[in-house]
Amino acid sequence: MKNDIRDLQLVLDGKVRLVAIESWDELRVLETLTSVAVQRGTSLVVWSITEGMRRMDFKGSRIENAHEVEAALRYVKADLQDGMYVFFDLHPYWQDNPLIVRLIKDIAIAEGVHKPTLILVSHALKLPVEVQRYAARFNLALPSEDELLAIVREEAANWSQKNRGVRVRSDSKTMQQVVKNLRGLSHADARILARSIICDDGAITQEDLPELNKAKFQLLELEGVLTYEADVARFADVGGLVNLKRWLAERQAAFMANNMQDMPKGVLLLGAQGSGKSLAAKAVAGLWGLPLLRLDFATLYNKFFGETERNLREALALAEGMSPCVLWMDELEKGLATGELDGGVSQRILGTLLTWMAERKTPVFVVATANVIKRLPPELMRKGRFDEIFFVDLPEPKVREEIFRIHLERRELALQYFNLPELAMLTEGYSGAEIEQAVVSALYAAQARQVDVGQQLLVEMLQRTVPLAVLMAEELTALRNWAANRTVHAG
Image (spheres, rainbow, N blue to C red):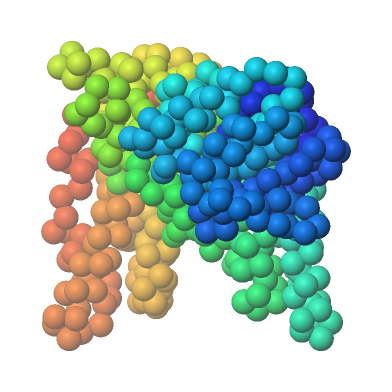
């Protein structure tokens, strides 16, 4: 709060008569303004539609005949002292009301040594055009990691006090992750989420992190072009991809260190459909213990000029609000494919994305997936956009065995009834998704025939499957040839 008080003092020293503060945390705003008023030796008066106008002194007395908006603003305009007048949620009253706008402007442009300052406070403030250039905007600083840790510890102590001294169970690693995932929230919101994960069972564990991230996502109102992926895959559920796993493990500490100069930026995963790119993207968040946001390019596009780029900018800004996080851009080529028939939208989208990738100041790790490399613009492929480009090929025999094992165990099918090496041999050219679908088909068939799932039935389902490697043999060969000397093999 000390920095907020100092910064607001500097704003007021500039003799600005109109200040706009956007914040959900009204109590903290009022605490900051009260401290500023005490230090400056000026009066502080607060107006709201429910309470009218009242002085923030020991008496807290109301000012008569100043409950209505117009009367309250006229009272401020007539004051000849250096007081601060705080108006909460005034923005609905200036819509289609030129008188209210003019009163605000009169206060903002008033000349004289001793004139009051009008401070507008709300969760969102779009000032009228007539007064925008006269206003100074001020935002409360978000809590630091030390402050967030103190908030979590305070809530833990409060819970302990209410529960006969029972201590909240946790460990240092989990506490550090909780603090990092609370970043970007106000003091009040961070306290609410910290309290929610403690009060359930008196513990702060790894199991609380997904719920914490989901609650933060909902709190920041990110729904729309961004989707929160709650079911983040465990990295053990990804067969193969040894090189990718090793690469990520080596860079996890650097990303978590929050040093933007050397922080890993992201990876591009290139490969055929069903090869496991999407699962790998989910697993990055699972491995690093971070929230996963999916950017759906299909929801970005809008028929009105400029709206698509604005949607992308808002989505990227909201992802920064969830940082540290993993931002998954699935099937990137569908959103950035170059063309001459879209009025230049794809080029503007590309420009917006490239600028953000180069200039972002928050820990957002990008995992982009693509199926058709030729449809991606060359500007995106330049070295430095992504830390590395990985080629995710169809799984090899040992990896296919592992994939069979994962999906059979997930469905509680006893492995001793299956010959995994034989299944791996029979599935040359199959993707992980096709193997999983064969297991699912075997379950359906077994239920219909009222028999148990076994080797023979699973082989039958596999023989009915025509893999993508056969249906799109030419495209897959071309993709492999392109990737041979340009990418790192993920396996």
